[in-house]
Image (tube, rainbow, N blue to C red):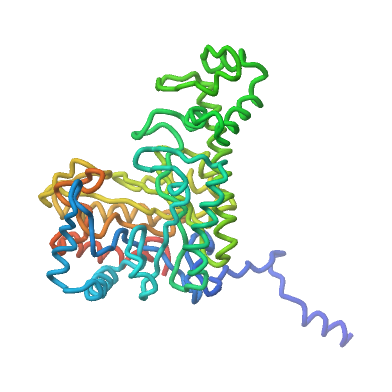
Length: 432
């Protein structure tokens, strides 16, 4: 009887036949930044195991932009006169952005700011160094040996030396690659490959892809509304019309998925060979060009899916589709609003234009409130630190994106609200 009583006393209590609820997950300290889902919310976790939302700013550089067609850098000229040295400017800039509640250096910040106390990100530009051009919409041959070699070379140069950095959040693979028709070009992705030289590995892959989908060239002609005499006609075919048969759209989407998986796999493996510790943050995707096949192709090959998202409000449905497609939390890596009262033309560049700095502040609050309410979002990076010159930068952009103007004067009305909103980021995301 005593033995039975001891057993009963040691047994767990049972209430209503239900097991006790599981303990909520806790952040894990790994010594490096990583992404983790805690209950319903995604977070970044810092090296010490604390929850972290990446509230970032891009393009923090003393040189600013160069006026198109000249060697003039008006922001650098103003800062050289004001601070006297890059070191003095750097200290002031880091103090200013952290004072506004920014905790991350986004893309295109000066590398002299890295490992200076503010977490940072690095863009590798792997496809861009292999023949792609985000501005012109040119695509790289992802099956070329050059692409694999470039990925290895850049990972060795940029990732290996930073493998043990505790302030590095992770790597962007590229910026706004073109995966389909958009403002840069009307051709589909597979058309770009078919128009590559006949001896290009990517061209051969595209031809083989169509061979697998169509038994004869007559079948291809019927589906795509072409008039090829034989398969060799694909070696010299040219596409220009934006009007396509439904089958060609379906084939291009399928080819995009194949090519994107190749892209992410090669890049992932190259980075991981040199740096097993830091996150791969995707490719700063432009959703207008990519659609869901690119995000789907990244599954298991990125830790965070990065998106440049210039919209009036951070509408949840498109982001949620990207989240489910990529199976990875979302980081907004560019967004912005511009104001007419800045005195800048604002005729070139992405993002909505509003009337005043007060309106721009309201839009900042509204966008961040909408965005951070989404459980799968782990941060947002404002574009950018300093305004573009009125005369236009290298691509003609001439907009009021900055926290400061080209004289290094703060937009006090706007920046005050930025500080307030950034301080509320955890609360907006449902944290305490």
